Picture 1 (cartoon, one colour):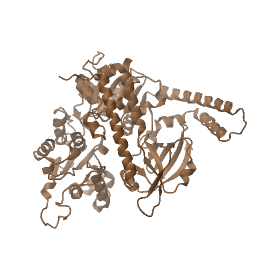
Picture 2 (cartoon, one colour):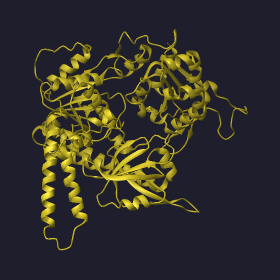
Picture 3 (cartoon, one colour):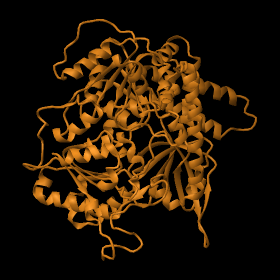
Length: 640
């Protein structure tokens, strides 16, 4: 039997894989920057062009900020969000060949985005005049060195870790039993039985506990309750998640329960409610802020009007600086002193504002979507950790195939689930889906343990409706010299490849997808759709298909009255969401039975469990059922 690597060897191996991933992502980024035209970048959501600089100012954190406004089509979903590095560029006109792109020499950081406005923090010495005067200005996401550096540092720290960090490292990589407190179970009247068990297990855990929440089982509700109860015993906790969106979601729920949350970083949805608990907004609302602002302004004026031979210059600067620092420390101590929950992304927990701060408990939400290295970033500040998520749903994104095969995609949550099943509580009652929709997922992914709450078991829009249908596009196939066949494309419903980053497209299936939805809408009736605001998610695993479906939806008159209730996105775009009706376009259709990354069944689990009452799947059954999972799913639907 091969010997298990020691925790330190395993983490060193991970560091190598992370290095591999870093290089793969950097190389992909370089190639895309050099080869992809600017229009493609805009279409992918990685650039805004053209833009105008509307203003520049020093923000409350004393950083130079530039506000830009997007001038182009705002229908395209973009990937800009708080904390991501961004680079300005100008596009120089060219009569022949591709346009020349000239990049500015500095990198900025996205502070927040709201519709067509974005605020970017830039280095202090940036020439704003150059930006304002630039012709044909744009901004694009640049390669995120910082996240990788922080993950590497976290792994190095954990490898060398002593004390609590070293203890947790060795525990997570061994079969040694996690320690627990013993006390009789507490009762929570508004939780169901498994949610109640989960909260009790969290409170009993000295080292680690896992809340495993399948779709619709109220994981966030349970987590919020566990945090509330923990705050009865501890003065402050740290709450982290992989994405800004997940941090927003849990923060908002905590604020709704009356808990004082201090959110480091800016939310993805910019509204007053979300902004009101951000560190930046709280900082500038502090009574001492006006005085601090005045001192900072005096400092800037002094520096810009420095006179030759002014002997007292340094003395004045030092005096103002120490007064500013003193005020800053005072404001921070007050803000952190009153907050019960400090919330940030995993990478954001490296913020220098947290230097020297320790917490009893760290809660990591959506832990199954985070690389293990990212989870170790906040771990140095805490004595125990609670992970919540579902490793049967979306995994972390790993670009390097080699790193993925060697295990970089295995999350800390999966590792602990394997080593310490006793630390896991599975939430078993779901409140989202009609039972027929949920049953397949429960049987395949959760050992049949997830049950439907009575109030949703038979939910449907139409009487005697079949909750799931699979429209088999291979039935529509036309061959030979039929007029439906385009001589270049072969049979009508075949997929086409449209380039590395966009994957595949199946136009005929896209058209049929909207036709199927239109047919279902006609059955429900226009008035009822509008009165009851029945919402729809159209999901496709491929970005090219998503864009094609969005285009079709925009151009079809029939859907005009319902457009605001219909969203089209990739599986990742629907993570954590639900809709009354979900339509999935699988795209793949070929003679070899190739299904590419649809083999990652966790993605499919997410897609099929977004639907509350009706699920319509479109796909070529002959291609898809080569794979045992899709064969089972197809047979299950046929058998309903």
